[in-house]
Image (spheres, rainbow, N blue to C red):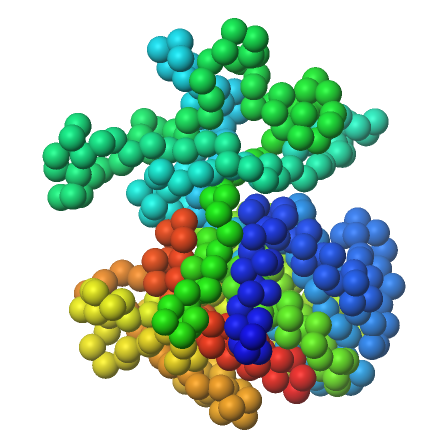
Length: 433
Ligand SMILES: [Zn+2]
């Protein structure tokens, strides 16, 4: 297997094991632990030393890993890569069981972020997330991970015979059309509580001990490499676990340098980032502050460190579509496997400017990695991302980049095998500076 194909398979395996933000963060935590990073609790007093490797988590769904440089932090600053752990989809509502004509049980769901709804239909789905159970301290319940590794549900399409206009486009109602079918009703089943009971059985605990849950649907089938020459990746959640994973691999592959390296994986990018674990919160600023102060420095040093830092805000980008190329800018045409994309927006939904764009282009050139540019067609409103939200909290020089892909927010997205290796290479070069 080629090196890039092997790296693509590593990404597919990581995403397959990370069907919720909690699982993604826990998998990153495990790799950091194995690499000798020390976990710091946000509530404890931190002890930080030059050359030390640390990480902390917020809400179990955001994670911040850093390796303290040997230089003076106010002169060397932070080398930062940020990405996000969440993906659009469906959360399970409380009291989710809905009986249908005394025969079926379906589950009530709520849409999270902006998924392409029709891609979720007719696919075997299951559930994953965090379950909160009673503990001795009423302010701190115990949290358990749940991931049911078998097909449990489907959101069925309507037959074409019952809707002859289906191929002219169908409006899907989020409350009516997107509820997954879980079960037939049987005489012995506890209809009102079957989801909690299922989770309790899976976790081998009493159903009564489960107080609450943050659980989402996921597609059961694993991602794959495809294409005539094995050049594409088909997987759920490439946006943005592909960038989170590349940042992690880069951090783990470099030793300590003079600069302090930081990987920040936020939650809730898909719903605007303004949560306590999102890029719109002060969490990153507080972590930077604690690091600088715990190195024995003052506020002046913190400000100098921030203004000596550089951030790569890494979130996936749109490749020119093979069937609908006219949706893209006429002169900036990013293609899959032609390298990471620098995102540019005149009205600053992306943070890139001539200064930070030049930095990233130079990083790519020095790392021998091709790069491309993305600008929206002027008559289309594009998405936004982490960079501009995060700079509202910490005003660091930032560039917005991401790998080109098709079908962003589909349950199955398509990316490039080579692009995955390219971005790992340039991230590794950046952290190694
Ligand atoms: Zn994203």
